[in-house]
Image (tube, rainbow, N blue to C red; front, side):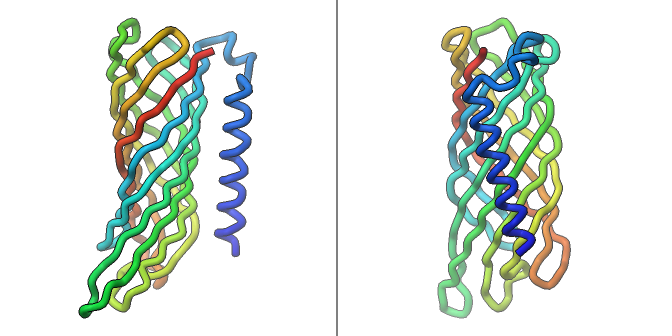
Length: 199
């Protein structure tokens, strides 16, 4: 029950973040630097214990350039994945949903160019709901929240001063608990295409 409440709070924060960002959010900060809104969608693989599921991820974020070539941002993402595993001649369905909120810094290597490679990372917290319910699973059916870290690597394609295409690879690692109470790692990673709007 607590996990569902936490997921609801995170999804609520996602909606608020999206609304604020799309409305032009935090105009006072925008006057101090280059404020940016980013919307992204792509594919992801979620590895929990011995099993990997694949699916889609969507995210929204807002950030501000705190100095030339360095962006601080906050974002929220939701991944929904599924898969299957053969167990004793039977097919066991697998599923995982992960909702995360992340904040960190991104460094841009050639900020004045049209093609701008970047790398970044920071801290993350995730609400997870995993169902690997087959007899020998080391995860089982579990849900909760866990802290972790994330990293990103990609390139910005600056179409014009206000609009940017961003293909990137993102990776996150969170600490979770199995249905037996053991601590495990939840690893999520995949390719996304983001659209960034500058104000």
